[in-house]
Length: 419
Image 1 (tube, rainbow, N blue to C red):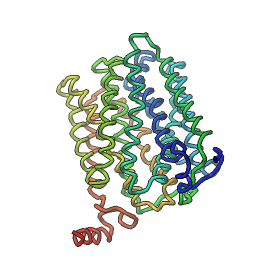
Image 2 (image 1 turned 135 degrees about the vertical axis):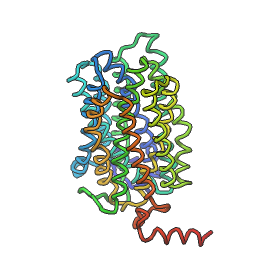
Image 3 (image 1 turned 180 degrees about the vertical axis):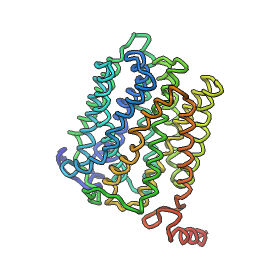
Image 4 (image 1 turned 90 degrees about the horizontal axis):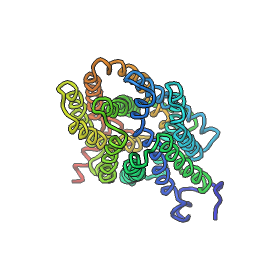
């Protein structure tokens, strides 16, 4: 049997026991990461409001600080010159777990920001590398369906954690420290196991070890920028609204997240199949139209005083629509040079977080004045994404990145000839 230090190709890895193959490792990591990150997120608003007295201003600063490592994800390109992607991804996952475990030990503005920065480095570097590994280890034909299953697996792992929180938080009078310690500890143990138990998997295409910024990827870059901006508004303010405006407690917020997880477990595999069947263009157009409706109605909650049931329903629908973002990954996989995947994943992650660095702070000040305007701004961002999605070709591939590519017309005509 190969040792954990052995390097094997993806083809050779098929001869290993199933639990030691690359696809199993992807599912293992997909299970481990959200146990820490989403548990941290589920308790965050209650923790910072109840323990540290946060308002919209402080929560804005917190999320801006949290996104700085995402903006600096381009640093992964330097690190992979010395450390293998697989190893670095697991080390980042360990950092996320450890930081999550000690979160509640520092219930002050400065302490929370410091620990958040550390956990964010782990999370964002892991996500950058994980996306790169997924696109390198999965074939273009299998990627949409497997990505949907990976999303569902992460939801299932988090579901177990959230059920335990809902059932035990009030009954056993749990503290934030106990929950964060357990969640972070589980992620850390799983990541350490993965680090020592698996060989190093070698993808067929050696990745570039320098920054890649190509003109033909311009549409993908813009889609990433707007996706990052609107995602911040949802992550920062949608959940904060449920606690601040409707007085949700920890177990109630977690119960809402449970609904999100169950829905994601059910629909994510079908979303993967939908991307495979309908294509990236139509899938993303559907997502963005849905988000326009959701964010518009979010604004109406404050302006017209709509109730908690509608707010909760919108929160679930919002979360479901974001699951369709796998179409953005597969769009890039189809148009990219296989050697560009790792460095472009880092560049794209940085672009995704440009707005995230300053937007929560700016909108945090706007929030204390007019929360509805925050969601109006989000609607404008989604409309911009919708316009960009219309530029995705029906049959994206290298040389056919946008509808302006010369080969797009040839692809369409050839498709009709075949019919």
